[in-house]
Image 1 (cartoon, helix red, strand yellow):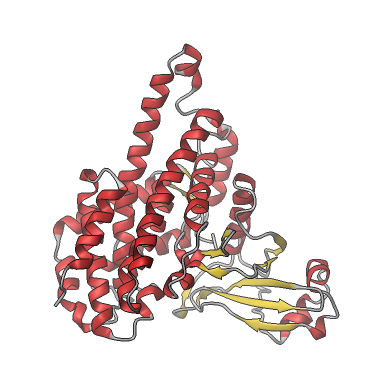
Image 2 (cartoon, one colour):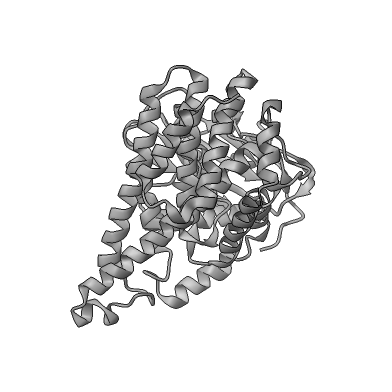
Length: 420
């Protein structure tokens, strides 16, 4: 898909004029358009996001820009990423119904997606920063991971359909390039766009960038990311891409979607729970919240394993680990052995991806608000140092870590350390 010369960015003033006749908006928000209340609420990194409120209801309007908004027009990006986001949301809804916002309208030429306004949902990361425990989030996310990753792979899909989908998402080159550089390479040298927010981190930053084992293993993970076209990924599944209430969880913003290793989405999500764990002491006395976050990691992985196993036994109709080799011959133990091996590989690789994600969110361009909202730079540096250390242990030592409890124990030990 090519970008279009007629593209024009929206703003709060022009949106009612340009979109005011769309049935999708009129049916949901109500008319007339000149009475709509329009607010821009984007996070400023990549896109424009507006809340449009009318007499009948409210919708979200999201528009991609032809550059990285966080940096400016010196870093161009194709508008086609909205196409990939729209297509990914459609696929995720098919594979895990009710897990993503409902799409109301898509305009590829203007890179606009109109979607359901989620209320009273809050961003999961914001809830964690505020010390709020969301009881359904971990289980729902474990189910989302298992269903979308399994059902988008050769374990479940007809071969032609999967290869056709792989070919479509293979064109999301520019956003993959962002991940390949910002996650796996830039944090480990003095890249132009890198930043860390506390001078107290200078020492450990220098250590990591001089650590040969870290750099080699980061490139092993990059190699895996770039070459293992296993399933359709969300591609950026952090706690800022999840909206929650006490009873519901929705996943948003899959514009980085592509075909890659199952373990990537798993590792990125788990790493954001561990980072939130380390950030909590910077926001006050949060022992109960820290326990909740570590339990959340365990619940995500336990739920993922259970649901992935259920799908393996009931929906494994693709070209991998065919039933003709196992169940149809009465060899259920062989099928279970294969399942255990697949899950073990996902776990090990997820730890490596988690380590890279923890490093890039502290040393690279795009940081986590979990740490950024800690005002005292010395306190923030102590929290970030512990996360950086865990990231190294996960990345370099992942082949020797076999359970969530081992990682959580490491996190608790690091949390007790006195960082000077």
